[in-house]
Amino acid sequence: MDGHASLNNTTSGLCFSTRFPPIVRQNNTITSYLFSTIFSGLGLTSNFFAFCVLLGAYRRTQSRSRSSFLIFLCGLVVTDFAGLLVTGSIVITYHYSNFIWKEVDPNCHLCNFMGFSMVFFGLCPLLLGAAMAIERFMGINRPFSRSSNMSKRRALCTVISVLAFACFIGILPIMGLGHYKLQFPMSWCFFSITPEPVDQIFSLIFSLVGLLSIVVSILLNTVSVVTLFKVCCDRESVQRRRDHEVEMMVQLLGIMIIASVCWCPLLIFIAQTVVSNESTVSNPIMRKNLLIYIRIVTWNQILDPWVYILFRRAVLRRVYPNLGRTRASIMSMYPMMTTSLRRKLTRVESMHP
Image (cartoon, rainbow, N blue to C red; front, top):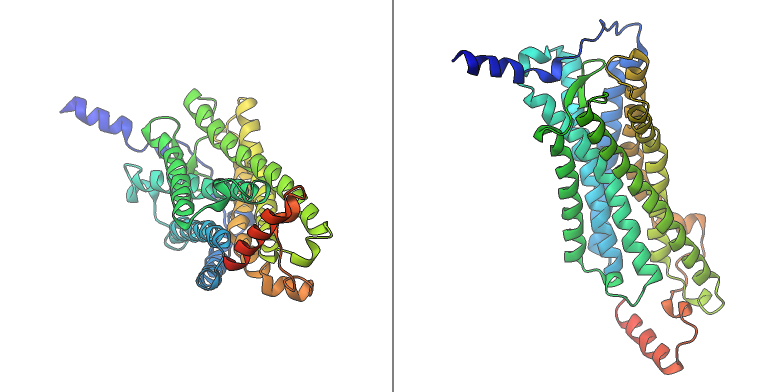
């Protein structure tokens, strides 16, 4: 019995091992509950509105590529909404009830759940953005390959695979690779960034996966934009512009830019902290920097929905009236095709928009 009790004492409450100085909320703007309340409210409202817009667009579309792309967007907006709902509800409850973590969660189950949610819902938009970049790259640059003709079922399976991979990474600290701990100002939990080997390994995994996703998105989207620009500038394709491809590419670029701006400071900060063998636990300046970078990341979930809302064809036509008046054809990508084959493919394209 004594051995079992001592084991429980050593394994319980590990997420509260860090001591923070008292928080004076009236004089410390960065720890104010208003940030969490306003950010959560804006994000939830924006994502719900964007989901309604995407659902209506999905029901109206007849294009297979467009339907697959909308499935990715729906996955992105649902994970953004769920992430804000889960993490925001915990943080706001803490601020307004002032509960004591050790009393409410003595075995760190709630803290581990919130830390897992932060990692899972944080990586999902980055990984989904990379998956969408790959799908659009194949659709624009390899129009006759099997991958460019992605069905709704394959798109859904891809989204589920991305979520499963993000879930696997989020579970690693619970399995022993890293630790989820209460973070300054004691209102949220995240993985610990310390010189301990397990913490460093997980921190690098999180940072490198996020940065790699952003790099893949930037490279593939750049190639896709260049290819699409060449197609639209071709004399023969001017009369048959694919407005839905332009719309998808504009939305994907918006998602990529927002993710890069919001996430790179945090991911680079984590990598630099690990490389310099420092700790965000013992350094008060780094604790505040981590909190600031997390608040910047939150803007990704707030701004993402407005990419879907504002960068639609209905809105783009008001900015560029010529968009949508003509229909595109991928045939301009392959000017060396024979005339008969070009006519056959054009006929098939007109039958299956």
